[in-house]
Length: 292
Length: 315
Image (cartoon, rainbow over all chains, first blue to last red):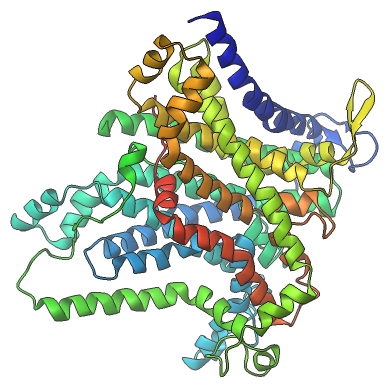
């Protein structure tokens, strides 16, 4: 390679890499540093070592947010994944209007969680919300409640709204993966007497494994990042019952001005994300070896 | 919304244009085809109505009057539909300004994040150099970083004047559109670099060599020879980036305060209290704020879907 060539490459890479370093990597490191301090956002941070971390482990609100996040993760990797897969199998057939159907099912993914949150507020609204109206119409008045204001249901209500949008993403990814399954394979299986369920269980699901890795990884990472929908629906309330780590981090930092503590919670989120990244990259490599 | 990676299919091949006929529902049995397909349509439509109910609800609401909703709630077929709410919120709220701000953030951030991806993608796809692989992994790992992990330092950075060697070169950028542009470019580099690097790796390998032998420099190879071949990938990334950046809420929530800087999503949130019971106005705002991304999606659905499903981490 000529010297001019080498210089050009350095110039090409320098700008974007510097940008990434200054506005992503450096803040990550600074956040770690802030997490070792006591700081109200004004004045000078005071170094307190790992106090914020030990405090988190003894803070029932942190434990609660952590537990809610774990529960959310458990739902996130199963519900939208399964619903998306079933919808994909249902829609992956030559129907006259299939393109229209697909577009309609994809639509939630184009919406901001601000808008999604707005809509779900109206579904959960206690007096005339859709959910309570439907329950009343079915004669189930006893089950109506203020879904977002009730500590028993606030977390579930938020997770359901989130799953609604996530299902569209899972559907899109599975539909694309389904087009790669050779039609002959399923026809041959049908000729050999495989039932629809057997085809689904023994052929479709195993061949979709790489897609499933992607769907589940994204569900996990979107859960960890999941702040917008909580903020729009409940801000973590009532009584922190619908807090997740992202929301808790925000409220500690920007409502209570415990910035050092907020940074420590952010670190916990980051560590969880790193674990996902490592698993994802290993899986991506492994599935490449298998499916080449 | 999150950033996305996808399955291992090479970019161009993964555009799902026509679905294959992989129906697990029992193949070509001797059922009467007409009634069977009618059943399938009915079934899909029934599920669609339930699934789309939230979107149908907001659309219906935006067409009713606030008085009608006060009397009957949001969830019914409107007696009279009108576009009056749209005119009302555009005329009487800062919504137009919020929309303008959203464009002022989204368009440059989309452009520069894709440009950065083109440059890094070229370097990572065409050359081997020490630590290239590690560097690449560090960049694309950015897709997975929760924004909370950068939130406090970036908030602090943009709240103070920019000084170089003790001299103030810029006032604090808090409550302007610039911090959001900067952050979305930096965070967007992960996905743009990943997809463009994969796309360029799939191009015929002799392309660059041939152009270099003909006397072209690296810049003209990239922008004259390679870039024209990247148009589909650029369309994919532009639609994805536009959608994510337009829909973002956390950064404008944290980094803006006034009408002059708030994007439309933060603006809608800010007006929530003021329009507490004006449901129809709120719905009209939600619809207006969603129009740009829906239009993009309808026009470029093929690219959008391809973007969601391609990528993966090819070694």
